[in-house]
Structures are given as C-alpha cells and as structure tokens.
Length: 290
Length: 304
Image (cartoon, rainbow over all chains, first blue to last red):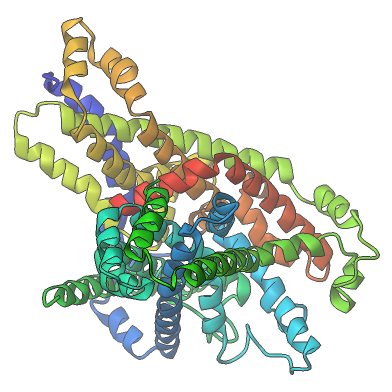
C-alpha cells in the first residue's frame, strides 16, 4: 500500500535532498557552463567573451597534449584491463585453496585512496629510487625514465590505473560469472565442447552486459584520473604528462583562469559522455547480427 | 555458490560421456596437473598485485640511507622512521577531521536520500508526473562528473561564508552522494512488499514510525551498501578537500598524504613510514568489512 499523505509532509520528505542536490550539483553545473563563456581572473566582474575560451582551447598545445595523454591512457588501460580482469575472474573462480582470501587481496588496491596509490607508485616508478629500475639494474639493464620524462608517463599512469582498478573490474566479472545459468554449460560439455569453445561461444557472449558495465565504468574512471598524475609527476615536465582533469585543475586553481578552466571542464564532460555513448552504440550495434 | 554447483555438476557428467573411453585415466591426471597450475598462477598473480604495498611496508623499516643504497638488505631494520613520522604527522587531527566529516556527511546524506526516495516511490503525489520527474531529476546527477563542480562549489562556499569550515566539505559530499543513494534506494523501495506497510498503517503508525521502525530495518542490506560506499568515497576524496580546506588544523587524511612529498623531500624513510601509517588502518578496516565491501561494490556496479 502506498502512503496517502498531505502535501506538506511530502514536501518535508523531499525538500532536504532536493535543496542540497540542486544547490551543490545542478546549480554548479549551470554556473560552470555560464562561466565558460567569460573571462575571469578571480577579481572584478567576469567579462562575457562568448566562445573565445573554446577557440583558445582549440589552439592550446597543452590541451592537445593532455587530450593525447588521456587517449593513450584510455586505450592502453582498456586494452589490458578488460581482458586481464576477465581472465583473473575466470582464474579465481576455479576451486583454489584460500580462493576467497585471494579475491579479497586482489580487490584491496581498489579501496586505497588514489592519492596514496600515486605515492606508493612513486617508490616503484621513480627513475632514481624506484623498485622497477633497481630490478632492471640487477639484470644489467639501463635505467628507464618511467615518470617525469618526455614520453613514458602516460603509459606509467595506465599501469598504475590498471593496478588500482583490476580488483574492482575482476569482482564485477566474478559476480557476472556467478549469474550464468549452469545448465547451458552442462549441455555444451555433454555435446563435447572444449573449455576454450565454451569460453568463446557461450561465456563471453552471455557476459555482454557485464563487459559493457565494466567498460563504461572504466572509461568514466579514466576521464577522472587526476590524483595519480598529481602525485607521480605533478603534470610535468612542462605539462607533458598532464591528463585532461589535471590540466583543468592547473588552469583553474593554480593559474586562476577560471573561465578558461570551466570551458575545459565542459569539454571534458562532453568528451566523457560522447566516448561512453559511442561505446554503447558500437557494442549494441555488434549485438544485432549475432 | 553456483560456481561450486557447476564444478561438481560437470565432473560426473563428463565421466559418463567418456565412460569406457581409453582416454579417461590420462584425462583425470591432466585435470589434477591443471588444477595445480591454476592454483600456482592464482597465488602468483595475487602476489604481484599485493607487491607494491609490501614494498612500501618493507622500505618503511629501512634506515633512510639504506633506501637509496641497498634497499634489499634486511640487516638494519628499524622503527626510527615511525618515530619521526608519528611525531611530525598530525595523525590524530587528520583522522579526527576525516572521521567527523565522514560521519556527518554520510549520516545526513543517507537520511535525506532515504526520505526523498521513500516519498518518490511510496507516497501519493497529486500529480504523478511530478513524482517521476523529481525522481529523474535526482538520478540525472549520476551523469555529472565531480570536477565540473569544483570551482562553482568553491565560489558557493565563499558566498555562503562557510569556506574553510567543515560544512564547506560536508555539503558537497552530501550532494554528490544523493544520486547514487537514490538509485539504490528507489530500486529497492519500488519492490518493497506493501503488506507490512499496510498492516503498520492500520495499526496506526504515523509517517515517522512507519519509516524508522518498519521500512528502515527491512532495508538494512541496501543501507549498509550505501554507508560503505559513501564512507570509502569521503575517506579517499581529494580534489574538493584540496580546494575547500586551507586551515592546516582541518587537514583530512588524503590532504595529509598529498603533503608527504613536500614535507619529507629527502627523508624517504619518513615518507614511507607515514604512507604505511595511513595505509594500514585502511587495510585493517577493509579486512574486517571485506565481504560487505565487495558485495556492495558489485551491487552498486551491476545496478549502476
């Protein structure tokens, strides 16, 4: 039965959430959008300049560098993370002594604050004091500039992102695998399907929704990467290792070009939405012929 | 559970299918070897994933000189780094602040989300359209990325005169949690069995009694998921905190972590001991709530 109630009681129930949400989420979004058409340095009145900020972004080399880095991180992370976490879910699904503990350990990095994840990895990737170069040096290899150099930082950030997300992605795949109907598997086993055939023709196709969920979550998470870059390189040298969000943070809060920063924030939001929607369209499109 | 059923279910069937086939015995043995390979692989991968954490913990016991020259030696392990870290870190302050902010924002966020979700699914609006429009309005927040809010919220806090206070962080944390909370709560409340509610209303329960002593207790699993999710978010949140807190005495855990690098420019031992001091409580709490965390994460992800 549904509660029949007076108007003011309904209002009383809905108002607090509505006020806080409108004030601190909806109003800020509108505000950002408005500010992205202005020039504002933190004092005086914002000056309306139309699309000038967006035009300036189009010719800002640091923006393109940050975009390129974000795309590299997106592609590298997804290409490794999705198959790796799915494989890990298949692996940890087998009956292994202490399997529950293993699953918990693998998930562990996902709850560590991103800012702490960044700090931990400084001690692995740092060219001078990091573990990775020491191990390489042990085998006689020359030290590699994993972070803070010209080219490798986005790949290093991908590595750290993969590390911090693999347990999360694995857990969703694991949950998805648990939901598969077991009779289909049994039937195919009777028909003589090998493990590989089962995986390719039954498990993966039936997991389509789960793959879509994990991929969308990871795409949106890549567009949020900020703390990792902040701790690993601070965006340097000269903004070469910046991601979109870390560059937005720099422009807005370090450089105090608020209007310009908000234009960048709007672009990031649109890009994130477009990439996610694009992925959905492509994956739905692939579904039809099958 | 179904995995175990499946594993045990598969064996006898394939054996029947292969009954009398000469390949049966080697196939069995191969199964056992495969199981060992799988087990070893699982432990190896898990070790690799945990290794970065172990490395930090190991280094935190090394004298600072060793970290640069000989980090793999175990001869001179020491607690000195921890002594320095504990004396120089505002441990009590940063945990106190973070816990205070987390408790208030998560309690308020959950409570008001629950009230809204209850009204938007279980109460009768004069116009049905308004009800579903409001539901959609709150859920639309799921699509809003947090970083677009940073600067406007900073300006808003200044305008409201709460910049630099606890409220400066608590209000945005509450606001940001509302869409996700509403998603889980409305999803659950829609399928809530009406009979219990009905009985309570006939027995004369008011709106308050109905919510607190009938509906809320039945929603414990969803509430637990929401609480865990929100607490993890508040503990890990950095961008808002870095902008909205300028008073050193109000530093939160993630803010303190971001300052390690500046604080210990050459004292790597101190930095790693500090990192370990922050890391360990998180890992201990996770170990305790591990089952619920993982369950909550999957519920949230699959539903989201």
